[in-house]
Image (cartoon, rainbow, N blue to C red; front, side, top):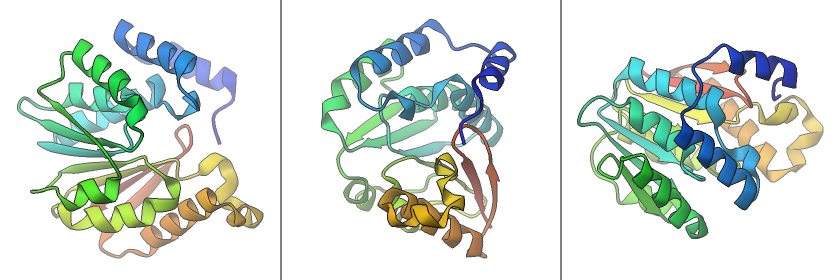
Amino acid sequence: MYLPLEIENYLLDHIDPPDDLLIRLERETNLKVMNPRMLSGPIQGGLLAMLVKMIAPATVLEIGTYTGYSAICMARALPVGGKLITIERDDELESLIRKYISWAGLEAVIDLRIGRAQSVIARLKGFFNLVFIDGDKREYVEYYNRVFNLVPSGGWILADNTLWDGKVTDPRSASDHQTAGVMKFNDMVAADARVEKVILPVRDGLTIIRKK
């Protein structure tokens, strides 16, 4: 479900460009980290930043840091005093993430937690006005259920990759655990009367959920 290259290039030519730090982070991710396609990139990063500016959350929780691109985009858009907790399971990425958080001057804003998301979430206190889910697709349903009570009424949950390269429309793909996890999550959210929801066909699909 990723856009054709010519459309993606057109979009990149007509939106605000990433700064040098984000360009460097994207380049280093492509050179040194497996599955660089997982990086949010300037289109989605710009959208996340815009949504944060619109919602103006005091607190944000991100599940799935990867190399930190989306965390930096959202943290920069926070109102003064805002905080972002981001959770990454892969401890081998920690030094790279912390390096770019430091270079971005966001050490006082971004709180990186390394570990399994379910365990970290169980220890969290307080509420989050915005949650961004972008971790293991097999665990999306569990992430949603665990964070739901941490989001106040009127709060927001974003979920990435909810079109999963178009595989969600192909019943034959349901045998793949990652695809099955996304499909189960989408069906659950669609049936959840406690929330309002819309799916944007941005990159690999972004679901925007508002808790009533």
